Length: 240
Length: 126
Image (spheres, each protein chain N blue to C red):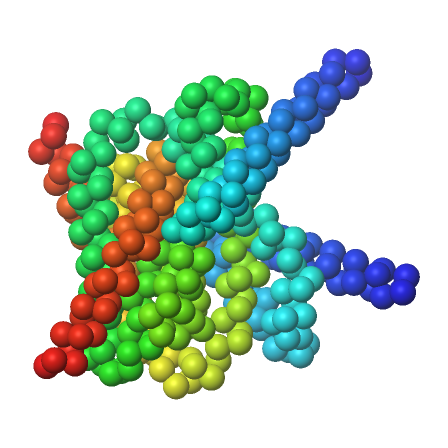
C-alpha cells in the first residue's frame, strides 16, 4: 500500500513537474527567439505527446497524474475577475457596443462553422461539434451532447481554435492595423475562449480584462442561442 | 533578518487571503451552477470575484500581487486537457485536415469580424 502511494506520488510529481519545466523551457525559448509558432502551450502539448508515444504512456495515465494542474484551471479562470474589475468602469460605459459586437461574433461563429462543415463533410454531428468550438469547454460539451454533436471532436476543435487564436491573433490583428488592447482582447476572447485569454493576459492587463469579458459574454450568448440556431439550420437544410 | 521575516509573513498572509477570496468565489460559483446550470462554475466564480472586488468585499490591494502571478502562469493549466488530442488520432486520420482547415478559417473570420466591428464602434463613439 505504502509502495503504491509513494509510486503514485512520484508519478504525480514527475507528470506535474515535467509539464511545468517543459512549459517554462519553451516560454524562455520563445522570449529569446521571438518565433510565433514556438507558442509554449502548443509546444509543451506536442513534446508531451511525443514523449508519451515514445514511452507508451496512455493519456489516462498522464492525466490521472497531472490532475493537480487541471484542478487549478477553475481557480485560475476565477482569478481573471481581477483585470475585469480594474476595467469595469470603461466596460460599463461601452456595454451596448460590446454586446452587439459579441452577438454578431457568436452568431457568425455558429452559422459559418455549421454550414461550412455540412457543405464539406456533410455530417451533422461534426457540424454541431465545430459550430460550438469558440466557447469554453464545459458549455460547448454540454450543448454538443444535447444536440447530438460529436463530443470528442468538440473537445478537439475547442483546443485547436484556442491555440490558433492565441498564436495568430496578436500578429494578425496588428497586420489589420488593430493595435488597441481593448479590441485585440475582445476579438481573441471571442474567438479563442480561455486558451486565448490565458495567452494574451501576458501582454497587458487591458487585454486580459477585455478577453475575459468576451469569454463570459460569448459563453452566455452561445449557451442561450445555439440550440435554437442549430435546430433552425438543421430543419432548414432538411426542408431543402 | 527580522525585516525579511516580517516581509515573508506579510507575503504569505496576502497569498492565503487571495486563495481564500478565489476559493470563496469559486464555491459560490459552484452553487450558482447548481441552481442555474447555464454557465460553468468557474465563469460564475469569475463574475462573482469581479463583483466582490467592485463592492470592496475583498481588498483588491491585498490580492493584486498573487493574482498577477497566477494569471501570468495560468496557461500551463491548459496543457493536460490539450494532451487529450492523443486520444483522437483515429478521428484525425479520418477528418483531420478538413476539421483543422474549417476551424482555422472560421477562427480567422471571427477574429477579424469582432476586431473590425468593435474598432468601428469605438471610433464612431470617439
